[in-house]
Length: 192
Image (cartoon, rainbow, N blue to C red; front, side):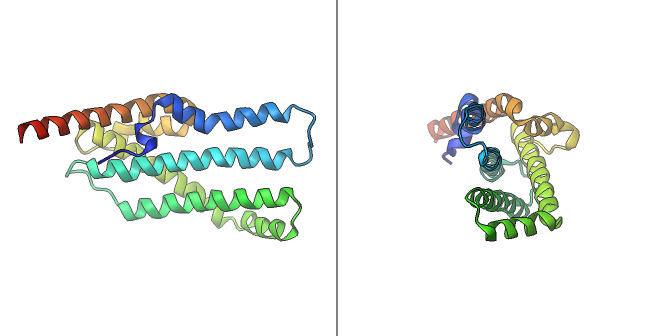
């Protein structure tokens, strides 16, 4: 199985993709450009980084779940529903914020509805936390090649939660897993 870009990338590449847009916009924010719309663009930039983070989680969950040991159970459908909800929620709110920056009144009404309906943002938070939980569990189970409990992968869970710092540790583990699997595949091919 060929790894996706997110799984074969080096930690610094993931860091650049997610954090450079934020740092760049913060530098631009200090310039005397149109300050009125900057808040919308800053929020949209943060949301872009969260969307990239969610795609990274999706790659970990879907690609690495195929390598889980037989003793570890995983609800792939539940993971897909939660991660796709979180991605969709972030994309929709980003588009609405960008529409609000050009002063479209319908976007304000729709965004107000989404914000006031507490169920949608709360379900987004649940989906995000549960997706992080699943990705950390999968990563550790594949790394240890055995069934894991929460105490086994709490370090990975916290690394996902502290994302910009955790990238450096998590992506290195993912790269080791794929290098180990590539060498196992090569050995299996040579034996055959």
